Image 1: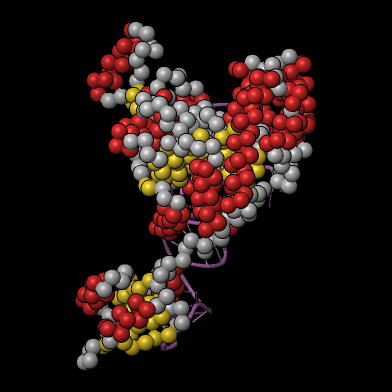
Image 2: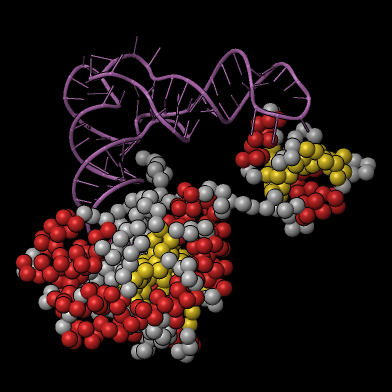
Length: 472
RNA sequence: GUGGGAGUAGCUCAAUUGGUUAGAGCGCUUGGCUGUGGCCCAGGAGGUUGCGGGUUCAAGUCCCGUCUCUCACCCCA
């Protein structure tokens, strides 16, 4: 049996030299924008304890299904397996660690580990790294993928930090020429206040939310059928359908008509109890502040209030956002985030750690960039090669390469093929611009070929270095 | 995790209702020609048709399993 047969594990990929270079360039570009906004880099391990990943006391539900867990090792594993067979299985587990499935939970753990050093000062950081989810792979969906997170901890403000996250993200996307992005904004509490106000039980709210979230993807009839299949009272079904009819004309997929937070309150007064209304008003007011301030700082920022936005991750406590492209060829979002004011405390950190973050999907950005404009990221400086032809033997090539490298110029060495045209073609495929082809003695000089111009030059070493350094 | 579609040479694809030794272009390679750019001529290598079973006189083709990709769910970046 050939164990090396086949590729990497499902949903994971190899990156060759070209792709690796593109990835490094993309990371560079994203980091530059983040640093401009004062975010500092951090990193954390690939693994965390299951206690951390599952949120300490909570039994993980949806997240747990997607998590890669790490088997205990050695005696601990034997003991666990033995105990499990003989005693209560829920007391012990065969796993104690897991691969992180996002960067927010590890960050929250990082803050609770290091909060004494950080001393409650506003802490802004960015984190670019791989995460793992045991999802079924699909286009734009992988089991190992990079996320690019920016977060602000001790972000005690109604709108300022949200707006900064949007501006920083907008700058990244514009730098990548992804100008058709848009930001959808809501608050996790809006739908739940509204639905509980209608009389829907708290445990059914998320089911209803998930169905409603599909309003843009599916036909209205299908949505109605899905709502009915949840099994609520007929009266509640009707209320939900009424709500959708009233609000959905303002949720046009073309992004032309979006309601304001005060519109939302006006349209849905009937569904709200006095108490729900009182809770909702400050939330909607904060939405309004975020929108107004974002727009005043960047009038072109494509940000919309979308009360039907739903996020599955349960650590969000307030505003939530999702970033997508208007291009219908990309049905998936390219980023998302929100406010998680209690996660850090849940993981053993201090109370009063308001936090908000936004994550971009690195692989999706890269995929879109490559599909839209292959050349966008691939520009690199002039490459230099030394051709080991019969006229320039190995004995001359390597010392010369070293001399050029000592000047800080990267050089590769190639062996020429028999056919000159094919040799040039090979060098072009390797993005070479300059090739040293021949060495002459007394006085020493070199025949240099510019592959772009298809022209030869005869230069001394100093002239050679000068030209290579000057060239764009 | 559930359900549909796909998988043939390094790449892009052929191969009649199951029927000879699975082909072509590009690429690679050998020699010739040319002698500082992709030409031309003559040859060559490269495939357990994703992998493993089954049906059949006969399987790339039909059936089952499995892996990977893909689409729709689920969920999300």
